Length: 186
Image (cartoon, rainbow, N blue to C red; front, side, top):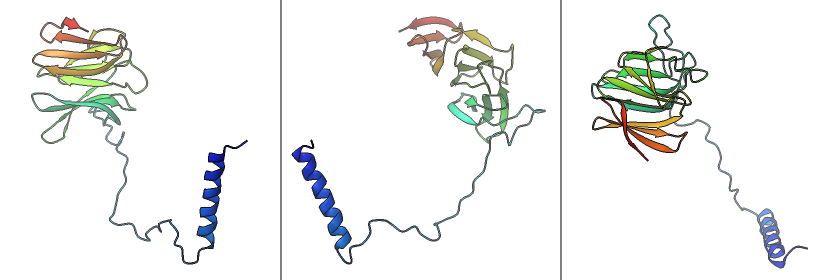
């Protein structure tokens, strides 16, 4: 059986609908779509459009993280169908600077996090761990791996320290960048 409260609410809604339908001149609550939308727009697809295998240039299709190094390079971490989930661009003019790929972390080399100091760039990967490379690009064999096999979800550089969010173990690690030794974690 229906409670009296539900029955009263149902009856009230039916009454409102009947009154609205029977009332002459009552305006519809639907807005009419404009015939010409204001302004103009352009759509494009950037992913792989800039792919240049000879120059090893590409555009990261999905960004997960970005950082700016002290020397003015903008590093991106994400996914690129052609590989090269990591890339560097010159912040001053946006020009392509370097490609980082072969993270061996899945289709398209996805990278979840990036941080950089003046000499190195650090990549957080899902399942490969923390990877470190020199500025200028990287491929298979050019990375040093730390926290191997871990899912690294976030990175930050501050005062010569690298802060690492290790999702696998639910820990934050602090490494000294000069020695790459862990100072503490919690």
